[in-house]
Image (cartoon, rainbow, N blue to C red):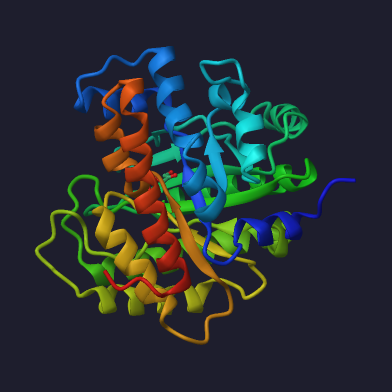
Amino acid sequence: MTKSLNAIAQKLMEPGKGILAADESEGTIAKRFAKINLPNSLDLRRDYREMLFRSTGAMTNYISGVILTEETLEQSAADGTAFRAILADADVIPGIKVDRGAFPMPGDSGEKITEGLDGLRQRLARYAGLGAGFAKWRAVITINDIAPTRNNIRANAHSLARYAILCQEAGIVPVVEPEVVGDGEPGNHSMERCATVTGEVLENVFKELRLAGVDLSGMLLKPNMVLPGINSRERPSVQDVAKRTVEVLREHVPAAVPGIAFLSGGQTDEEATAHLSAMNQIGGKPWPLTFSYGRALQNVALRTWAGRRENFPQAQAAFTHRAHMNSLAALGTWTG
Ligand code: 13P
């Protein structure tokens, strides 16, 4: 019998655990590899992800689920062991990124709309057959002088809802990710502007999810934190970010949602950890908060690995350290 959606969501939110986002598209992983002068080859992508998934300490203790690409879901380690078997050994739930990326929105507002709904029902059935327990779809919300537009927010919210209901139909927990981007251009917006936009986006997303008939107890939300743009001179304290983020979420995220797992969005590793821990020190929230980080879990491990299998142990130690720190943050007990 398939596990209930709520049971999967609860397991992903197990106290002291969070999600590893290892679903960089080919374009994104190419950029990450280029920074350390590596070509984007199939073997290197496999080695890199093998290094992460075979970090046994991190995976068994601190990671509840991993978001994979289609390539990785069906891939095997160099010795022929399927990645899915490695994750199963560590009792980690495999997830799958199902969107096809964010493309320019018609018009000249500089915004993006995520594609990937065509054929999604068939793809989800296949991913479910391969053991995927959850999925991710990322909507990108841009802030600039004229954006976000109502049209873009509605289009992205509608796509997220169509994705989410198709996931639930397939027995897969949708991770609903509306990212108000903080590290893009121009990136000079204030923290308050991010708070307003994040609130408006979440309001629209939950309106569309309800309209589509999505069971809120069988999904997770993956939002941005409330932060000033990357090029803003505003420097809020860790406590300010935590307080404002929790306020916005409390106002717009129904208590029926079983958990919230944040993206790191270009924050430094320590900032991402500190903000999560501070939010978890705020009492009276209806949902648990954890991490679903890509960069903030991988930055140091990627550089340490540097494309060499002989560096696996050191890279795995670096990854395990970040996973441990974020585990403490998920419990609200990280102190730096
Ligand atoms: P970052 O934590 O690097 O922002 O990535 C998380 C993610 O999955 C973005 O879609």
